[in-house]
Length: 110
Picture (cartoon, rainbow, N blue to C red):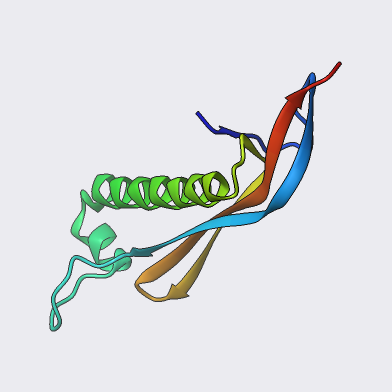
C-alpha cells in the first residue's frame, strides 16, 4: 500500500524525494445528451440531485487519487508527502480535481 500524507515528514522515517506527482480528474456535472442536458444547477433544481452529484464527485476524487498513486508507483515510491487537493470549475458543467505531492522512497531511521 502506498502511503499518502499531507505533511512534509513521516514519523520515524527518512526518505529520498523522487519527484513531483499529480493525479487529475475532470468531473462532468451533466447527465449527458445535447439538447436538454442537465448541468449541476439543473440537478439541484430537480431535487434529489444532491446524492447523485455527491456520488459523481466522490468517484472523480477517487479517480484523481488513484492517478496520483499510479504516478508515484511509476517512480518507485513508497509514499507521497505534502499531498494537496484542489478543485476548480473549468466550465459551467465541468470541475477539475487535482491531487499532487512529492513521491518519496522511505527508509527507517537508524
